[in-house]
Image (tube, rainbow, N blue to C red):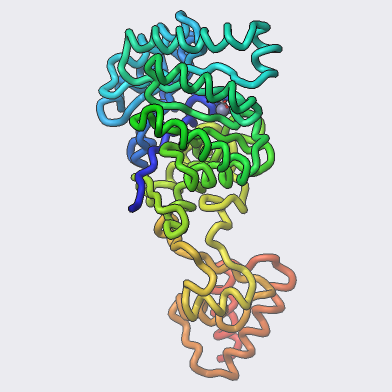
Length: 390
Ligand code: KIV
Ligand code: ZN
């Protein structure tokens, strides 16, 4: 049976932690509106205890889209942070408190300088307090992938008993690899199902080794019910899991994962461009799904194959992600088939094969000096050729 995967977008919280990506309130609201169009299940709107501006932005997002999409905000395992989260999201239709606390030895020793039991108790107290405010509480075991498994599990067990409804397992520093992360999720999932099968198992990956998407998909394969992502993979350091990659990975390879999201994939490109424009952070041209070249084909062999049947070199259609259509870039490596297609698209006749061959040779000469040949170049080339011939 196909499982439904919950998508939490954290572009406005983890994504906004990128240096230089500061967004003002109006921009955050616009992005939240687009995330609603994209049909994400949960928007993580900010970290309200961090500043008065962040608090107000979360409130404004709740006011604008909180009637139709679940809203969460992040706080540390302290009462003042949880109060700030609650106050900023309480008017949303489906508010969710998100608490984070580390479970790895390095976090316990270096960040908190307390005993493991004392840190665990902080988490339990935080969840118990949050439950007095709202029914839905997510608990993130920060640095889970570098934690000792039995302590990690002891923490999960204790916070579930205290009332956590979502357990989020982060690969905070992007250290995990797919086989190992999948195995970690499988082990947690097996125990969690016995403890309380209503609890949602979630993952949150970072991309320091370029493996965030692979780790997230591996987690889904091993039982994760929820994925945390950002648009364009924005986030601390090398970023978070890219929403567009995970969503299309699950869609294109549904036969492998038996899982699907409710994302309206035709909105992906528009969302990516909006976030890029608002943050001022360009999307790399060869970025999967939303990069400028994601559906552009330049080699003659590929162009010839595509013109025979798109499926020869396309695993998803550009229209599925909101792009207009595949793009054939004419270069010196393009063949006769692609050039003919471009000429005919402009309604020029190509039936005289000797004449077309002359034209093709002129095109190759132009392509040798010009790296890429655009539609207007083709137009001038053909009309110039026709005039000199008469
Ligand atoms: O990377 C991380 O561990 C986080 C948590 C708050 C989920 O961002
Ligand atoms: Zn993170």
